[in-house]
Image 1: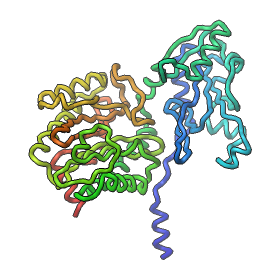
Image 2 (image 1 turned 30 degrees about the horizontal axis):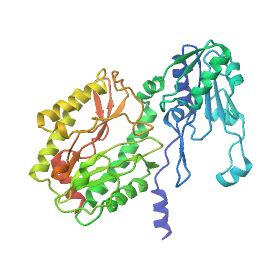
Image 3 (image 1 turned 90 degrees about the vertical axis):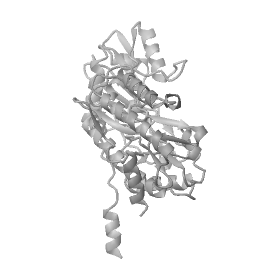
Image 4 (image 1 turned 60 degrees about the vertical axis):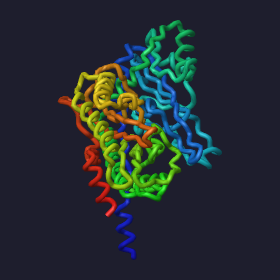
Length: 415
């Protein structure tokens, strides 16, 4: 009994490693090299889960700091003599910490842990920004969140510029461009997320049988994710059977599966905050009908055509045209109702420029689909690729996607 329990403990998933402070220091240096000497401030813009009260930091702030905490600010001052990177954390609150847990006091250890020049508490004001500057300009690096563009960091940047007579320089796409290229440590976490996701899809191949509900399939997928080390879901799991598979983002997951259905499953694990994004289409009866197979092969061929066109220098916009041309040749262009793919990283729909050449190190999805509500089914196949110096690497190649391989996988899983 004790030996069995010990084996279970030893087999427990290993938590994802934290990226070292040097990674974040390097990222901040890369940003400061492109600020042209201007000072910049960025505020945390995360969200709190209403169910678990877990805080999820926005991708830009997390990418620059590694800090998953609200009410935080980052000040970057390339021309400052000493404090070129200053982190502002929210003030400590003993009463609040009795509910949420103790927070570390300011100390040299905290400074070293975050890898910044200085850590303060509270919100930066004009004086704090002005004291770190030594420049004649303020750069706005925050993306536009809404029409009014009233982000607190953008407002503070404009206030400082107005009060001190400084220029405002807009570099809205700076972080998006820099975040496109992923470092080895990031790629390791992303590939682990894909490995875990494969196990969830293996559970889906086994579970997509007539009589169960879409929710039944969802729970088996997500159990496989978390029991194999997932730290979260990259997004709400989509299990669309029959006509629901023709709905792009079906998330009710309440229909019973029926013989002859196809089931579009768009579900993926998060690991160490890095997302994955995989879709497969499974036949409930174990085999695709002739009509279903025709559509599936067209979607598969569109993927193949996109893969063949991937290389450094091509843009996402270029690849969209390849996808559309492929499905037009197959006669299904009108049923292709979305873009062929998107960037993946800290967020499942990550930062990146769709109109510029893809850099080596970019990771994105290739997900053509055909949706036929009048025929009662849809097909989507989604994989992740990494741009390399010679073309691409297929990160999710271990998850079967060719029609015959999917049928064989389903058959093996259900034995």
